[in-house]
Length: 148
Image (cartoon, rainbow, N blue to C red):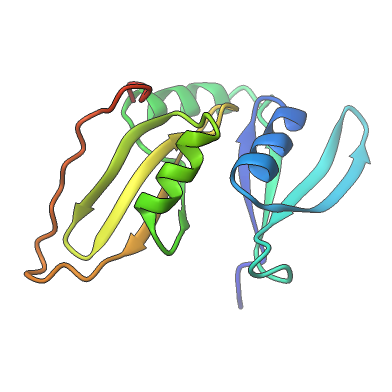
């Protein structure tokens, strides 16, 4: 058994497709009309046959309260692996992406959290080689960051 699809609820499929492809760098995998909405998926260009992300319409009544609650608590909906969190943070900020947490090292992992503009906080993460295993952990906001 393996994971072939994960869903992210989005409040606008067109906006989500633009963000996930033009900013995050995913590539379209499926775009099939399904009545009012589309079966719309993206995939990593590093693994075009890998796990697809379904940009799922968030019109179910349970979705907005869930998204609002976890976003208010600063909890990312999901996490994407990157090789260098600081480099990806810098690249995305240059593209106008808002972050609620700048790169922060905790133990063996460095993370940052961004706003995907369609209802979700998304974490980017990379394993680090902290010499003492404790990491740094400076998550103070920078100009242009948005509160979580």
